[in-house]
Amino acid sequence: MSLDLDGEVIRKVEAILYSSRSPVSIKLISQILSVDPLIVRRAVMDLRRDYEKRDGALEVASYGYKYRIQLKSQYFSEAYAVSPPDISGSEMKVIANIAISERGLSLTAIKKIAHQRTDQILGHLEDMGLVRSVSRGNSRIYTLGRKFESYFGISKEEFAKRIRSEIANKSSGDDGSASNQQE
Image (cartoon, rainbow, N blue to C red; front, top):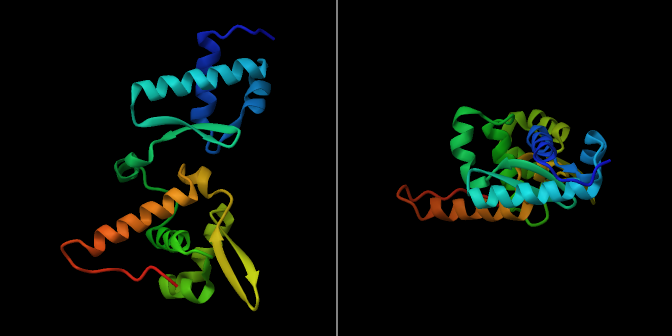
C-alpha cells in the first residue's frame, strides 16, 4: 500500500462517496481501494475542502465516522422537481409530523394524518428504516428511524427545525391557514 495521495486515489474516493446511497466509513473505502486508511482520510478531507471552496450544490457530509457526497439541503426542492423521492407526499406528511413531535406519535395520531392508508404508509416507512415503533404502556409510539439521517442527508433535529419553520411561515402567510401539526 502506498502512502502517496495522488489524484487517482482522490477521484476513486470521490466516486465511492458519490455512488453510495448511505454513508461509507474510511475503513471500508480503504479496503475497497487497497489503500492505507490515512490516505483515504486525507482524500476525504481534501474532497471536503474542495467542495466547500467550490460552494456548489453538493457537499461531503459526515455522519459520525462515515461520509458521503450529497445534495445540500437548500437545493432539495429543485432537485426533487425532476427526481421525486421514493416516498409519497402522505408518507412525507407522516414523517414531518413524527419529526416535530417531542416524544413520537401514537398510532391514533398517525391515523388522523394518513387515514385509511396508515398501515400501508407505516409499513413502507418501517421497511425503509425511516420510522420505527416502540411500545410505551399499552400503545405503540412511532419515532424517526435509524436510516432517516442518511436517507435525507439532514439530522433529525435540523429536519424538525425546518418543518417548524415551514409551519410558522405558512401560518403567517397570505392564506391564513395553519395546519395542526401536534398530537
